[in-house]
Image (cartoon, rainbow, N blue to C red; front, side, top):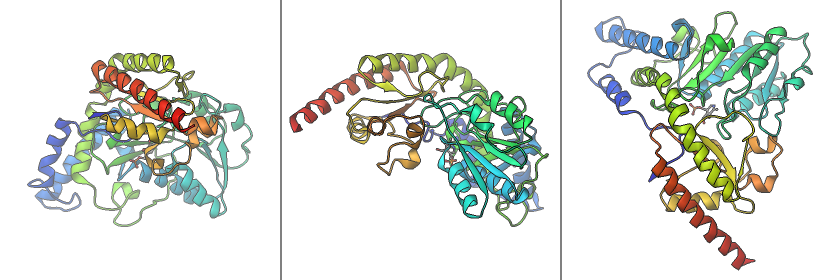
Length: 379
Ligand code: PLP
Protein backbone atom coordinates (compact mmCIF):
# COMPACT_ATOMS: atom_id res chain seq x y z
CA UNK A 1 0.00 0.00 0.00
CA UNK A 2 1.37 3.42 -0.95
CA UNK A 3 0.40 6.27 1.36
CA UNK A 4 -0.39 9.55 -0.38
CA UNK A 5 -2.47 11.15 2.38
CA UNK A 6 0.17 12.94 4.42
CA UNK A 7 -1.91 16.10 4.77
CA UNK A 8 -4.43 14.03 6.75
CA UNK A 9 -1.76 12.58 9.04
CA UNK A 10 1.82 11.40 8.83
CA UNK A 11 3.44 8.24 10.18
CA UNK A 12 5.38 8.80 13.39
CA UNK A 13 9.10 8.89 12.58
CA UNK A 14 10.87 5.89 14.23
CA UNK A 15 13.23 8.20 16.16
CA UNK A 16 10.20 10.10 17.49
CA UNK A 17 8.58 6.88 18.67
CA UNK A 18 11.81 5.75 20.32
CA UNK A 19 12.09 9.03 22.20
CA UNK A 20 8.49 8.73 23.42
CA UNK A 21 8.54 5.12 24.66
CA UNK A 22 10.18 5.61 28.10
CA UNK A 23 7.58 8.26 28.96
CA UNK A 24 4.80 5.69 28.74
CA UNK A 25 6.49 3.51 31.36
CA UNK A 26 9.46 4.04 33.67
CA UNK A 27 9.64 7.81 33.14
CA UNK A 28 5.98 8.48 33.82
CA UNK A 29 5.08 11.29 36.18
CA UNK A 30 2.80 14.28 36.44
CA UNK A 31 4.81 17.39 35.57
CA UNK A 32 3.12 19.31 38.37
CA UNK A 33 4.20 16.80 41.07
CA UNK A 34 7.09 17.87 43.27
CA UNK A 35 8.83 14.50 43.61
CA UNK A 36 11.53 13.16 41.31
CA UNK A 37 9.07 11.65 38.80
CA UNK A 38 7.22 14.93 38.49
CA UNK A 39 10.35 17.04 38.26
CA UNK A 40 11.76 14.78 35.53
CA UNK A 41 8.50 15.02 33.58
CA UNK A 42 8.51 18.80 34.00
CA UNK A 43 12.11 19.08 32.74
CA UNK A 44 11.34 16.85 29.75
CA UNK A 45 8.34 19.02 28.82
CA UNK A 46 10.43 22.19 29.05
CA UNK A 47 13.08 20.64 26.80
CA UNK A 48 10.41 19.71 24.28
CA UNK A 49 9.01 23.25 24.51
CA UNK A 50 12.42 24.61 23.55
CA UNK A 51 12.59 22.32 20.51
CA UNK A 52 9.11 23.32 19.34
CA UNK A 53 9.91 27.00 19.89
CA UNK A 54 13.18 26.67 17.97
CA UNK A 55 11.39 25.04 14.99
CA UNK A 56 9.12 28.07 14.56
CA UNK A 57 11.56 30.73 15.80
CA UNK A 58 9.50 31.65 18.84
CA UNK A 59 10.41 32.01 22.51
CA UNK A 60 9.66 28.90 24.61
CA UNK A 61 7.37 31.01 26.83
CA UNK A 62 5.19 31.58 23.74
CA UNK A 63 4.44 27.86 23.27
CA UNK A 64 1.16 26.59 24.76
CA UNK A 65 0.75 22.84 24.36
CA UNK A 66 -2.75 21.68 23.48
CA UNK A 67 -4.30 18.38 22.38
CA UNK A 68 -4.86 19.27 18.72
CA UNK A 69 -4.70 21.94 16.06
CA UNK A 70 -8.47 22.09 16.47
CA UNK A 71 -8.09 22.93 20.15
CA UNK A 72 -5.40 25.55 19.45
CA UNK A 73 -7.69 27.30 16.97
CA UNK A 74 -10.65 27.17 19.37
CA UNK A 75 -8.41 28.47 22.17
CA UNK A 76 -7.31 31.56 20.29
CA UNK A 77 -10.74 32.37 18.81
CA UNK A 78 -12.74 31.93 22.00
CA UNK A 79 -9.87 33.40 24.06
CA UNK A 80 -9.81 36.60 22.00
CA UNK A 81 -13.62 36.81 22.02
CA UNK A 82 -13.62 36.78 25.82
CA UNK A 83 -10.64 39.14 26.04
CA UNK A 84 -12.02 41.64 23.51
CA UNK A 85 -15.83 41.35 23.67
CA UNK A 86 -16.44 44.03 21.01
CA UNK A 87 -14.36 42.31 18.35
CA UNK A 88 -15.21 41.55 14.76
CA UNK A 89 -13.96 38.14 13.61
CA UNK A 90 -12.58 37.88 10.08
CA UNK A 91 -11.56 34.54 8.57
CA UNK A 92 -10.94 33.37 5.04
CA UNK A 93 -13.55 31.36 3.17
CA UNK A 94 -11.12 28.44 2.85
CA UNK A 95 -10.28 27.99 6.55
CA UNK A 96 -10.46 24.56 8.13
CA UNK A 97 -13.79 24.02 9.98
CA UNK A 98 -11.92 24.27 13.28
CA UNK A 99 -11.64 28.01 12.52
CA UNK A 100 -14.97 28.65 10.78
CA UNK A 101 -17.10 26.67 13.28
CA UNK A 102 -15.84 28.46 16.42
CA UNK A 103 -16.50 31.78 14.63
CA UNK A 104 -19.98 30.50 13.81
CA UNK A 105 -20.44 29.78 17.53
CA UNK A 106 -19.37 33.35 18.32
CA UNK A 107 -21.89 34.66 15.81
CA UNK A 108 -24.61 32.91 17.79
CA UNK A 109 -23.31 34.73 20.87
CA UNK A 110 -23.79 38.05 19.06
CA UNK A 111 -20.30 38.70 17.68
CA UNK A 112 -19.91 40.20 14.22
CA UNK A 113 -17.95 38.17 11.69
CA UNK A 114 -16.74 38.53 8.14
CA UNK A 115 -15.87 35.74 5.73
CA UNK A 116 -13.05 36.94 3.49
CA UNK A 117 -13.39 35.66 -0.07
CA UNK A 118 -10.59 34.10 -2.13
CA UNK A 119 -9.84 34.36 -5.85
CA UNK A 120 -9.88 31.48 -8.35
CA UNK A 121 -6.40 30.45 -7.18
CA UNK A 122 -7.48 30.27 -3.55
CA UNK A 123 -5.65 33.44 -2.52
CA UNK A 124 -7.27 35.78 -0.01
CA UNK A 125 -8.73 38.91 -1.54
CA UNK A 126 -6.66 41.52 0.30
CA UNK A 127 -8.73 44.45 -1.01
CA UNK A 128 -11.79 42.97 0.66
CA UNK A 129 -10.09 43.50 4.02
CA UNK A 130 -10.52 47.24 3.65
CA UNK A 131 -14.30 46.69 4.02
CA UNK A 132 -13.77 45.67 7.65
CA UNK A 133 -14.67 48.67 9.84
CA UNK A 134 -11.47 50.07 11.36
CA UNK A 135 -13.15 51.63 14.42
CA UNK A 136 -13.72 48.29 16.14
CA UNK A 137 -11.24 45.72 17.56
CA UNK A 138 -10.64 43.10 14.92
CA UNK A 139 -9.29 39.57 14.92
CA UNK A 140 -8.40 37.89 11.67
CA UNK A 141 -7.43 34.32 10.97
CA UNK A 142 -5.94 33.29 7.64
CA UNK A 143 -4.28 29.91 7.16
CA UNK A 144 -0.68 29.85 6.00
CA UNK A 145 -1.22 26.93 3.62
CA UNK A 146 -4.44 25.21 2.67
CA UNK A 147 -4.86 21.54 3.54
CA UNK A 148 -6.71 20.69 0.31
CA UNK A 149 -5.04 22.74 -2.43
CA UNK A 150 -1.72 23.38 -0.69
CA UNK A 151 -2.02 27.06 -1.74
CA UNK A 152 0.25 29.30 0.34
CA UNK A 153 -1.20 32.66 1.36
CA UNK A 154 0.56 35.97 1.01
CA UNK A 155 1.00 36.39 4.76
CA UNK A 156 3.20 39.54 4.69
CA UNK A 157 0.44 41.46 2.89
CA UNK A 158 -2.23 40.20 5.30
CA UNK A 159 -0.11 41.01 8.36
CA UNK A 160 0.69 44.45 6.95
CA UNK A 161 -3.03 45.17 6.71
CA UNK A 162 -3.56 43.82 10.24
CA UNK A 163 -0.80 45.98 11.74
CA UNK A 164 -2.09 49.08 9.98
CA UNK A 165 -5.55 48.43 11.40
CA UNK A 166 -4.37 47.30 14.84
CA UNK A 167 -6.04 43.93 14.27
CA UNK A 168 -5.00 40.78 16.11
CA UNK A 169 -3.81 38.29 13.50
CA UNK A 170 -3.66 34.51 13.75
CA UNK A 171 -2.48 31.99 11.21
CA UNK A 172 -3.21 28.28 11.09
CA UNK A 173 0.19 26.86 10.09
CA UNK A 174 -0.79 23.22 10.65
CA UNK A 175 -0.07 22.27 7.03
CA UNK A 176 3.02 24.44 6.76
CA UNK A 177 5.17 23.06 9.60
CA UNK A 178 8.00 20.93 8.20
CA UNK A 179 7.04 21.63 4.58
CA UNK A 180 7.85 25.33 4.30
CA UNK A 181 9.54 27.71 6.72
CA UNK A 182 7.32 28.77 9.61
CA UNK A 183 8.94 31.69 11.44
CA UNK A 184 6.82 33.28 14.16
CA UNK A 185 9.04 36.33 14.40
CA UNK A 186 9.28 36.97 10.66
CA UNK A 187 5.58 36.33 10.12
CA UNK A 188 4.92 38.90 12.86
CA UNK A 189 1.53 37.40 13.68
CA UNK A 190 0.07 37.45 17.21
CA UNK A 191 -0.74 33.77 17.24
CA UNK A 192 -0.04 30.67 15.20
CA UNK A 193 -1.24 27.06 15.30
CA UNK A 194 0.84 23.94 14.63
CA UNK A 195 -0.03 20.26 15.07
CA UNK A 196 2.37 17.38 15.70
CA UNK A 197 0.70 14.64 13.63
CA UNK A 198 1.06 16.56 10.36
CA UNK A 199 4.84 16.65 10.81
CA UNK A 200 5.86 13.06 11.75
CA UNK A 201 4.96 13.41 15.43
CA UNK A 202 2.15 11.66 17.33
CA UNK A 203 -1.55 12.50 17.13
CA UNK A 204 -3.24 14.25 20.06
CA UNK A 205 -0.69 17.00 20.66
CA UNK A 206 -0.30 20.44 19.14
CA UNK A 207 0.63 23.97 20.10
CA UNK A 208 -0.70 27.48 20.05
CA UNK A 209 2.16 29.93 19.66
CA UNK A 210 1.04 33.23 21.09
CA UNK A 211 2.75 36.48 22.00
CA UNK A 212 2.14 38.03 25.39
CA UNK A 213 0.89 41.33 23.97
CA UNK A 214 -2.66 40.09 23.56
CA UNK A 215 -5.18 39.25 26.21
CA UNK A 216 -6.32 35.67 25.66
CA UNK A 217 -8.84 34.39 28.20
CA UNK A 218 -8.34 30.65 28.90
CA UNK A 219 -10.68 28.45 26.87
CA UNK A 220 -10.10 25.35 29.02
CA UNK A 221 -10.08 26.31 32.66
CA UNK A 222 -8.82 24.28 35.59
CA UNK A 223 -5.50 23.60 37.29
CA UNK A 224 -3.64 26.36 35.46
CA UNK A 225 -1.13 24.40 33.39
CA UNK A 226 0.47 26.01 30.31
CA UNK A 227 0.60 29.52 31.76
CA UNK A 228 -3.04 29.11 32.72
CA UNK A 229 -4.02 29.08 29.07
CA UNK A 230 -4.64 25.37 28.80
CA UNK A 231 -5.44 23.54 31.98
CA UNK A 232 -5.24 19.77 32.15
CA UNK A 233 -2.38 17.36 32.77
CA UNK A 234 -0.05 17.55 29.81
CA UNK A 235 0.24 14.69 27.31
CA UNK A 236 3.77 13.89 28.45
CA UNK A 237 4.84 11.28 25.89
CA UNK A 238 3.01 13.17 23.13
CA UNK A 239 4.79 16.43 23.92
CA UNK A 240 8.17 14.64 23.99
CA UNK A 241 7.35 13.18 20.56
CA UNK A 242 6.23 16.55 19.22
CA UNK A 243 9.52 18.07 20.39
CA UNK A 244 11.52 15.35 18.68
CA UNK A 245 9.47 15.69 15.47
CA UNK A 246 10.15 19.44 15.51
CA UNK A 247 13.88 18.75 15.50
CA UNK A 248 13.38 17.35 12.00
CA UNK A 249 11.20 20.19 10.68
CA UNK A 250 13.97 22.32 9.15
CA UNK A 251 15.65 19.37 7.41
CA UNK A 252 12.26 18.14 6.16
CA UNK A 253 11.55 21.56 4.66
CA UNK A 254 14.75 21.33 2.61
CA UNK A 255 13.95 17.75 1.63
CA UNK A 256 10.43 18.67 0.51
CA UNK A 257 11.77 21.47 -1.63
CA UNK A 258 14.64 19.54 -3.22
CA UNK A 259 13.21 16.03 -3.52
CA UNK A 260 9.44 16.12 -3.31
CA UNK A 261 8.71 19.27 -5.34
CA UNK A 262 10.19 17.66 -8.51
CA UNK A 263 7.92 14.63 -7.90
CA UNK A 264 4.93 16.96 -7.61
CA UNK A 265 5.86 18.56 -10.98
CA UNK A 266 6.35 15.14 -12.56
CA UNK A 267 2.98 13.91 -11.30
CA UNK A 268 1.15 17.06 -12.38
CA UNK A 269 2.70 17.01 -15.86
CA UNK A 270 1.19 13.55 -16.32
CA UNK A 271 -2.11 14.54 -14.75
CA UNK A 272 -2.49 17.41 -17.21
CA UNK A 273 -1.66 15.10 -20.12
CA UNK A 274 -4.39 12.79 -18.84
CA UNK A 275 -6.90 15.66 -18.88
CA UNK A 276 -6.95 16.63 -15.21
CA UNK A 277 -7.65 20.10 -13.88
CA UNK A 278 -5.21 21.01 -11.10
CA UNK A 279 -6.69 23.34 -8.51
CA UNK A 280 -4.71 26.39 -7.42
CA UNK A 281 -1.93 25.66 -9.90
CA UNK A 282 -1.33 29.35 -10.63
CA UNK A 283 -0.50 30.08 -6.99
CA UNK A 284 2.50 29.18 -4.84
CA UNK A 285 1.74 25.82 -3.29
CA UNK A 286 3.14 23.36 -0.77
CA UNK A 287 5.69 21.06 -2.44
CA UNK A 288 3.78 17.87 -1.61
CA UNK A 289 0.14 18.62 -2.48
CA UNK A 290 -1.72 18.07 -5.76
CA UNK A 291 -5.48 18.58 -5.73
CA UNK A 292 -7.10 17.71 -9.05
CA UNK A 293 -10.17 16.38 -10.82
CA UNK A 294 -11.05 14.72 -14.10
CA UNK A 295 -14.21 16.21 -15.61
CA UNK A 296 -17.22 13.87 -15.28
CA UNK A 297 -15.39 11.42 -12.96
CA UNK A 298 -16.59 11.16 -9.39
CA UNK A 299 -13.86 11.63 -6.78
CA UNK A 300 -15.09 9.09 -4.24
CA UNK A 301 -15.46 6.42 -6.97
CA UNK A 302 -11.91 7.09 -8.12
CA UNK A 303 -10.60 7.10 -4.53
CA UNK A 304 -12.20 3.70 -3.92
CA UNK A 305 -10.75 2.29 -7.15
CA UNK A 306 -7.28 3.60 -6.26
CA UNK A 307 -7.55 2.17 -2.75
CA UNK A 308 -8.19 -1.27 -4.28
CA UNK A 309 -5.08 -0.78 -6.42
CA UNK A 310 -3.01 -0.02 -3.31
CA UNK A 311 -2.95 3.79 -3.15
CA UNK A 312 -4.27 5.85 -0.23
CA UNK A 313 -5.42 9.26 -1.48
CA UNK A 314 -8.09 11.69 -0.26
CA UNK A 315 -11.16 12.99 -2.03
CA UNK A 316 -11.09 16.32 -0.21
CA UNK A 317 -10.29 17.33 3.34
CA UNK A 318 -10.06 14.43 5.79
CA UNK A 319 -12.69 15.94 8.03
CA UNK A 320 -15.26 16.16 5.27
CA UNK A 321 -14.52 12.82 3.64
CA UNK A 322 -17.60 11.31 5.27
CA UNK A 323 -19.83 13.70 3.40
CA UNK A 324 -20.59 13.83 -0.29
CA UNK A 325 -20.69 17.62 -0.33
CA UNK A 326 -18.13 19.19 -2.66
CA UNK A 327 -15.18 20.87 -0.97
CA UNK A 328 -16.00 24.30 0.48
CA UNK A 329 -12.49 25.36 -0.53
CA UNK A 330 -13.14 24.64 -4.21
CA UNK A 331 -16.57 26.27 -4.11
CA UNK A 332 -15.00 29.38 -2.54
CA UNK A 333 -12.53 29.42 -5.46
CA UNK A 334 -15.47 29.49 -7.85
CA UNK A 335 -14.93 25.95 -9.14
CA UNK A 336 -17.96 24.39 -10.76
CA UNK A 337 -19.80 22.08 -8.32
CA UNK A 338 -19.71 19.10 -10.68
CA UNK A 339 -15.95 19.37 -11.25
CA UNK A 340 -15.42 19.84 -7.49
CA UNK A 341 -17.21 16.49 -6.90
CA UNK A 342 -14.37 14.84 -8.77
CA UNK A 343 -11.62 16.20 -6.54
CA UNK A 344 -8.78 13.93 -5.51
CA UNK A 345 -5.88 14.97 -3.30
CA UNK A 346 -2.45 13.41 -3.41
CA UNK A 347 -0.27 14.55 -0.51
CA UNK A 348 3.23 13.10 -0.60
CA UNK A 349 5.52 12.62 2.37
CA UNK A 350 9.25 12.81 3.00
CA UNK A 351 9.52 9.11 2.14
CA UNK A 352 7.75 9.33 -1.26
CA UNK A 353 9.81 8.03 -4.21
CA UNK A 354 9.73 8.52 -7.98
CA UNK A 355 8.93 4.80 -8.39
CA UNK A 356 5.83 5.24 -6.22
CA UNK A 357 4.69 8.22 -8.27
CA UNK A 358 5.30 6.36 -11.54
CA UNK A 359 3.34 3.35 -10.36
CA UNK A 360 0.52 5.67 -9.23
CA UNK A 361 0.37 7.28 -12.67
CA UNK A 362 0.16 3.85 -14.36
CA UNK A 363 -2.66 2.69 -12.08
CA UNK A 364 -4.49 6.01 -12.36
CA UNK A 365 -4.43 5.83 -16.18
CA UNK A 366 -5.88 2.31 -16.10
CA UNK A 367 -8.59 3.20 -13.59
CA UNK A 368 -9.64 6.31 -15.47
CA UNK A 369 -10.00 4.36 -18.70
CA UNK A 370 -11.96 1.64 -16.91
CA UNK A 371 -14.30 4.12 -15.18
CA UNK A 372 -14.85 6.02 -18.44
CA UNK A 373 -15.77 2.77 -20.23
CA UNK A 374 -18.17 1.86 -17.44
CA UNK A 375 -19.77 5.30 -17.65
CA UNK A 376 -20.09 4.99 -21.45
CA UNK A 377 -21.74 1.57 -21.12
CA UNK A 378 -24.20 2.93 -18.54
CA UNK A 379 -25.09 5.91 -20.74
N1 PLP B 1 -5.91 23.14 10.40
C1 PLP B 1 -5.60 22.56 9.24
C2 PLP B 1 -5.20 23.41 8.09
C3 PLP B 1 -5.67 21.18 9.10
O1 PLP B 1 -5.38 20.62 7.94
C4 PLP B 1 -6.07 20.40 10.21
C5 PLP B 1 -6.22 18.95 10.08
O2 PLP B 1 -6.61 18.41 9.07
C6 PLP B 1 -6.34 21.06 11.41
C7 PLP B 1 -6.26 22.42 11.48
C8 PLP B 1 -6.77 20.31 12.63
O3 PLP B 1 -5.62 19.76 13.28
P1 PLP B 1 -5.82 18.55 14.30
O4 PLP B 1 -6.05 17.33 13.49
O5 PLP B 1 -4.51 18.50 15.06
O6 PLP B 1 -6.97 18.89 15.16
